[in-house]
Length: 206
Image (cartoon, rainbow, N blue to C red; front, side):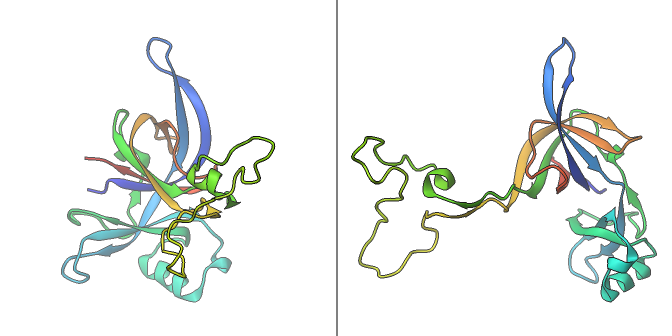
């Protein structure tokens, strides 16, 4: 049984739960996704399915990708992702995956690419305290001490100014509030990684 689906983050809104409680939710347009390849233990050494999502013009697909989709007998897809599964079972190439694999109350993890924030200083990027804000200070938001001074090099992982965001992030323990099978929508309580319009992977947690 497959427990994951690809989708596109639409944005955030709020819904009213029982008792008039306002619940902030993220709307995800999930699927329908289609299985484009099945990987078995006998052939590849592990069980997984490759899933395609999102429409794309055939003119914008490379020849190798076009051949891959033609072999699977499915229309070209914009995004491809691979999901591990416990066993292949009756999963077949061309089979559609829809939001009905989820139910309200399910706990899920959502993986996406966080918003890119460009070049950021140490205070914003690493939450450094910063220097004195008084008139005579000249080190308000500078990184200040860099640790060891005799290594003649910068150690990997040192917290310095640099590019912030644009990284793969997974948020776990989110809850499905509503499932709209007709419109292929999932309403997930809370915020999920990424900007509106970004691709996310929603996976059911055990």
